[in-house]
Image 1 (cartoon, one colour):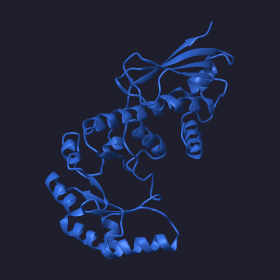
Image 2 (cartoon, helix red, strand yellow; image 1 turned 90 degrees about the horizontal axis):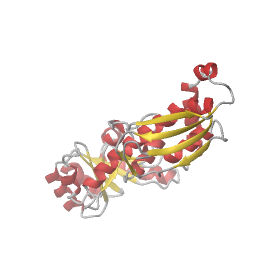
Image 3 (cartoon, helix red, strand yellow; image 1 turned 135 degrees about the horizontal axis):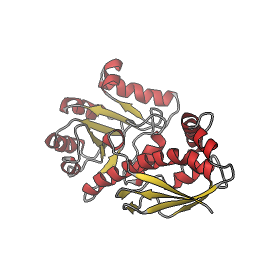
Image 4 (tube, helix red, strand yellow; image 1 turned 30 degrees about the vertical axis):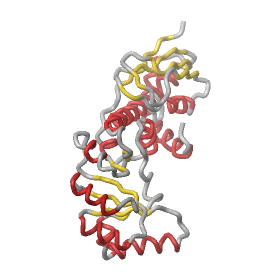
Length: 285
């Protein structure tokens, strides 16, 4: 499902410990040990499905004998009553892992659906939509995968894969020039190959960054569309550009039409509505 097996294995271990702990005592007390079941995961919503391949990993982490049949693929548009995944195997184990699987799919599909909604709005432009670090602790790798499934682009995964200089860093380092020079020297000293992005909040700060250079991307924070257009003229494609702050689905088209390279949208992961999915099980004869 994911390229990072270590993250998945830690995640599923934590999820089982949280939900199952010492045991699913309801199933253990009411369902015979060798009972088997046929089940289907069904969509109750319209949107972009995500987490399909993840489901097999979740069930197989407990019981590799469970048979999983995928009827759709990640990124498909689905409608209510669509049978997404068929599952057959031990009844206790399937019911034990049901909620973990559904929770992941619901969260990921909600993110993918909203991401696709926004990317469709600006599909006539070259601007890409970025996610942020405003994610659910422990689920970031899943939520960011859902953004990609929905047509967005991942920003940095964490604090370790990009130098991103924001206002607090600038203040503590003694200004824009100092922060840029210190970041560059750090990469040299530590033999690291990372991009450097810096946030600017007005034209004065932008002018200072352009004078110094030595960065890869400029984040234009809380710029109006008019000011963003002026800023992009000044930058003149010398650096990657990112617009952030105050951008909603109501104004995202105007921002994208400026030609900015990226628009970051925290709402992709921090304010999304979960997709409605259910599991229907039928006891085998």
